[in-house]
Structure formats: C-alpha cells, structure tokens
Image 1 (cartoon, rainbow, N blue to C red):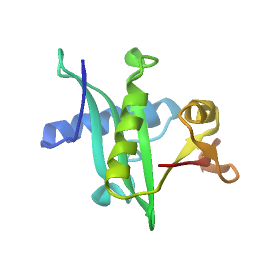
Image 2: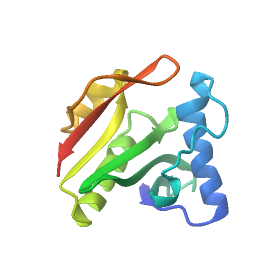
Image 3: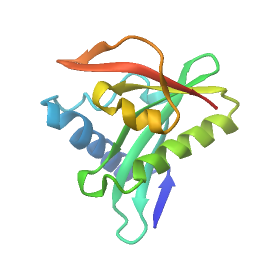
Image 4: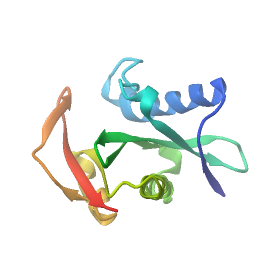
Length: 145
C-alpha cells in the first residue's frame, strides 16, 4: 500500500530531494541543486511511501502561485513504479489539500510531453509554451477545484 505523507526528518528530506534530482534533473544533464527552487521554504512537501519497504517512491510540492491559485510542481515517481497510479495519487492529494485550504484553482507547469497526462486528470492548457531549461519546454496547465 502507498501512503502519502510529508517529509519530517532530515533523512526523509534528503531522500525526497534525491528522488526529485534523479527523476527530474539528472536525466537531462542538470547539476545537483537544480532540483530545488526559491519556493521551497513556502511549499508544502509530500511524498509517496511504500508501506512494505519504507521506500520513498514519489514526490510533489504545493505552494501559492498567486492569490487564490495553488501551484504544484516537482511531481515525480521513480521509474520502476511509474504507470501504477502513484502520480495520480500524489496529484489527487495536492488537489485535496489545496481545496481544503480554500483554493479555487490549481495549476502546474507541465513539460510538453506530459500535457496529455494532465489533461486526463482534468487540467487544461492555459498559456503558450516557454523554455524551462535547455531545450525543455513547459506550458501552464490549470484546473478548477
């Protein structure tokens, strides 16, 4: 079974950021440190943990982008556990947290090759693609809560 929880200990945060680096930055040749951004201190961090092994297998963070708009980012699942619904569990969790905190809209910057994934979850493209790093392009997608 998968449990969604917030990292609390130094070791949990280390594993959380390590997963973000290994899934979201290392494959594109980005250096360590790029898995973090200026929003870390004001974000709520969540991780998917396998109850049986205790392994952190996914992560996502949530913060306020602009007044009344929640923003999630760094949604990642380790490659051996992808296509098992874990990303969807993490996304549903941040949507529920945002809704409980009074947000009416939630969004994310999605890589162009992931827009269909987010569209299946009810998100719509709301903007033009822009370069994120290197040749990677992203587009803002959002959903009413």
